[in-house]
Image: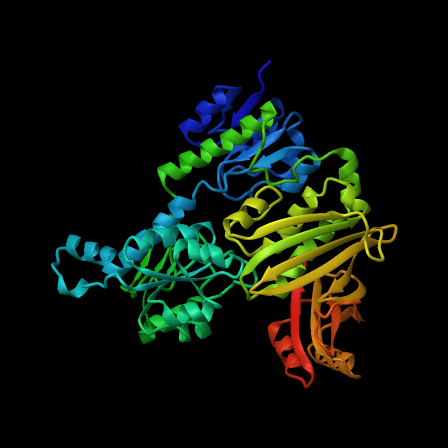
Amino acid sequence: MSARVLVAEDVGESGVALLREHFDVETGFDWDAAQLAERIGEFEGILIRSATKMTPELIERGERLRVIGRAGVGVDNVDVAAATRRGIIVANAPQSNVVTAAEHTVAMLLALARNIPQAHASLTSGKWERSKFSGVELYDKTLGILGFGRIGQLVAQRVKGFGMNVIAFDPFVAAERYRDLGVEKAADSDGVYAKADFITIHLPKTDETKNFVDAKAIAKMRDGVRIINVARGGLIDDAALQAALDSGKVAGAALDVFPSEPITDYPLFQGYPQVIVTPHLGASTAEATDRAGFQSAEQVVAALTGGVVSTAVNIPAVGAEDMAALAPFLPLAEQLGRLAMGLAEGSSVERIEAAFMGRIADLDTRLLTLAVLVGALGGRTEEEVNYVNAGSLAEERGIVVEEKSVSEAEDFNELIRVTVHAGGERVAVAGTVIGPAQVGHLVEVWGQRFTLELAPNVTVFRYSDVPGMIGRVGSVFGAHGINISSAAVGRQMKGNDAVGKGLAAMVVSTGERVQREVLDEIVALDGFVDGRSVTLE
C-alpha cells in the first residue's frame, strides 16, 4: 500500500506532482487547525510552508508520521526536538532562495544608484523631473559586502559584470575563496567601510550582529555611502541610519527587511526620498516558491523510499550502539568547535581539524566531526547550521575539514581536540567527559592543560606568569557584577610553546556573558596580553 502524504499548504505544482508520482497525496490548503489535528494521524509525510505550526501536540497526533518537509529555508514553525524524539525526519529547502535573494540585492543596488522608484513615482504623478533624479554609475565603484556566504558570493559574481570592485569581510571564509572570485579580502569590517561606495549586508542575526551597522560603523564609512540590507532586520541601528541620512553622511539606503514585520510605520517610510524600501521580497519569486516546494518534496520522497535526505535538520541516523557511546560527546564536540573558533575569531579560517583519541576513536566519529562544525560555524553563516549542512557550508567557504582518530589519549580514556588554523596561526582546544554524569570538561587551551567543567560562558586570558594576576581578574569581574563559577590556571604541556615564553593562561567560567568592554579593561592592565570570551550555548 502506497504511503500517504498531506500537502498542507500551496507549495507549487511541481512539488505536488513529484509527490503524486510516488504516493497517495491529499491537499489540505483550506483545512483549519482542528481539521489538521484530527486527520494528521492518517499520513506518513506532511509538506508545509510557514503558516502550519508543527507543535509538539500536533506532532504527537501524527502517529504514522515519518517525515516533515518544510518548503523554505528555516524550520522555525516546526518543533524539531519533538519530531526528533518521535524519530521523524525534518527536512527543509535551504538553497531554494539564495539566487532570488542575491538578485533582489542587485535590483536594490541598481534602483538605489539610479533613483528608479523615485523617478517612476514622479513621472506617473504627472511630473517630468529628469535632472532631479540623476544617479551614479556602478562602473569602477566599490561594493563592500559584510558576510561572504552563499548569497554574498552570488552578489559578488553578479556585480563583477557591472565592472564593480568588490571588497568583503567574513572571517569564516578561507582566503582562497576570495581569490577564486576576484574579491578583495578585508581584514575587518573597518576595511570595508574605508573603501566601499556601496555596502550590502549578508550576516546572520545573532546577539553579536544586532545593530552591527551602528553610529560608530557609519562614522568610519566614506561620505556619501549607500547601504543595502536584504538580509535580516535589526542588523542596522535604525536611529543611527536616520541620523546619517539627515546629515548626508549616508546618501541613500535600500531596505527589504525591518526590525519587526509586518510594519507600515517605519521612521524612514515618509520624508526620505533617498530611501527605497520593499516589503521583505528577497525570497519572493515564483521560481523560488516553486523551487522550495520541489526541493522539499524531493526530501519527502527520499525519506519515505529509503533514500538520502540531504537537507535533514535533525541528527542523521547512526547505529544504536555507536549512538549510545557517542551521545555524551556530541555536546562536548560542539562546545569545543565553538570555543576554538571563538578564540581564532578575527582571522580568515583555513582549516578545522577534529581529532578523536582513546576509546571513541574506534567508533563512527563522523557525527562528532559534524558536531564540531556545527559549533564552529553556528551563528556565523546566513543559513542555520545543522548536522547535515555543516560540511557543505564549510566546503563552500573554502575551509578544509580534517578528521583524525588516534587509539591512545594523553592522560584520559577519551579526548577530543579541535584545532583551527586561521591567518597563519593555530588555536587548539581539547576536552573530555568526566564522572558518572559524563559532564564535559575543558582540559587544554593554547597549549596549556586545565581541568575545568564547561559552563555557558568561558573566558580565557594570556598574561605574564607573575603572582597576583588571578586576583586582578576577580576584582574587575566583581566590580562589574560578574559571578565566577570556576577558574583554573594552566600548566605548560611538555614540548609545547603555543602560549609563548613567560606567558601563562587562565580559563574562567561564568554564568553570564562577559562583555567586550570588561575584557578590554582587564587586557589593559599591566602584564595581560590577550583575553577572549566565548558563549558556548
